[in-house]
Length: 141
Image (tube, rainbow, N blue to C red; front, side, top):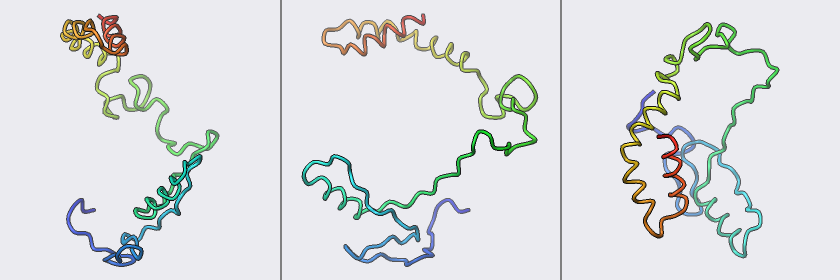
């Protein structure tokens, strides 16, 4: 499958018409405009106009597998992706470190910035959320 470059349109037409005659040229059917609940005066008309100007493609949702369905991977152990039990470990799913190990490394790196963050948190007019954030970071050191 080509990633970039020219893609020849297949369906329905290579060029769209102007204004009100414009149509999707990628062959994808579009959704009908949706109404906004509790729209203020004039918002509904504006929203419909925006949706008609740039129609969204219809989305096909993947089928949901029920909990009581038989497994779709009968040859894969339940412990696949974990470092315990049969099957491949974390490295097979791109996780070389545990979350705990990574958090410890992050905390050590952030500790170097803590004095500057505490100084900034003590300035007048600093949002309370920033002060709480710095206190939270301090609790790890």
